[in-house]
Amino acid sequence: MMRRFAGVMAVAVMVVGGGVVMGQTKPAMQEKPEKLSDPAADALQSYLYAQYTNDQASIKKLIEVTASKKSYADTLTSYWLWARYLERRAIEKWGKEDGMRVQGHVRAFDEQYAIDARRIRNAIVQYNAAKTAASVNFGIELNRPEGLQMGDTFNFLDTYEMVKVGGEWKLDFLKTYKRQGTDENEENDKAEMMAYPRMTKVLVDLCDQLKKGQLKTADDMKNIFDEKWSHVYDEPVRTVIKPGEKPPAKEEGGDAEPDK
Image (cartoon, rainbow, N blue to C red; front, side):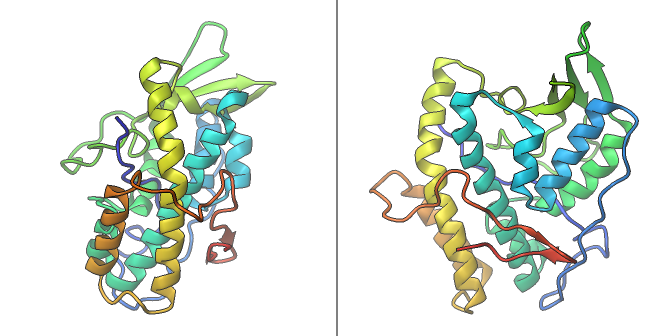
């Protein structure tokens, strides 16, 4: 059974001042972190930063996935980046607490990134004997909010799997997100390939409605989001985001609006 996605990644919301006040201007994006001495950890740091900056082109270069699963990885990545973009806009509009609960989060993506950007600097990296694969473990986070990872197999992770390909370290996408070739995973992947493009279109539409002032409260947005998820398989969706379609991208001093 497919688990509903809960969220992905993080920014300078908590880092730059402990929250966003309604109507506040966009917080500045964090700068790219300094290079780490461990090559596998450094590659993971680059991957997390690419997520944070909505840089799908870099994400594609930083992950390793089988040819048959590239479309699947593109589909999930597009959803994740639009989800982060929508959360940022909702937080700017209604404040952190209301904005992040639109998608059912107990911690904002950007807050998680700020935490992980610190945790990775002290991560434990375990290599295999041939040094062609590695696990990067952040350790168990103290005082983690209850329910942070509930129903979410993609985000707020403590361990990431890395693999060396052609002399470069990359995120082992399927192993990290536990999508390696079991019958259960294959069925789950099929369901996600149906649901996530549809829900990505919902995220795009919600961003557009928010920009036009058509959503007056966070509850208005949350009700639409929840209702669309509850009926995601009910009928064909005439317009969807195609796998790999360009998500919201980084711009100087902030993150850009999504391309339509």
